[in-house]
Length: 83
Image (cartoon, rainbow, N blue to C red; front, side):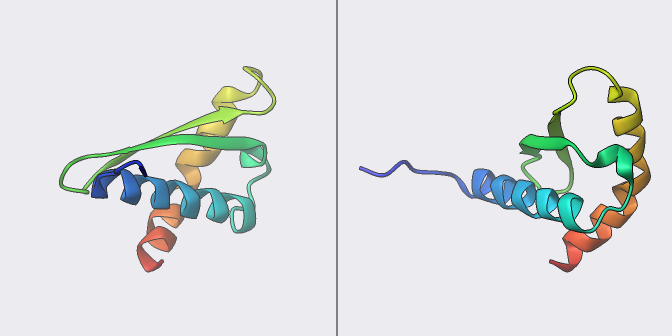
């Protein structure tokens, strides 16, 4: 019997996939290169999302990665909205 997923979980998974692709292909900031998006939590009204990630480089450079993601956040929001 297949697992049942709520609409919110499916939307969160799609947001994770789209953001991962955007970061990999479109973001040119070298600080953001080696990360993996692990989870996305979306509010019930789909207005806000919390994105969790891990760095392939470990704890070193985590502050720089966060700074790069914050700098790219408006671009990511805009492109995610288009998709």
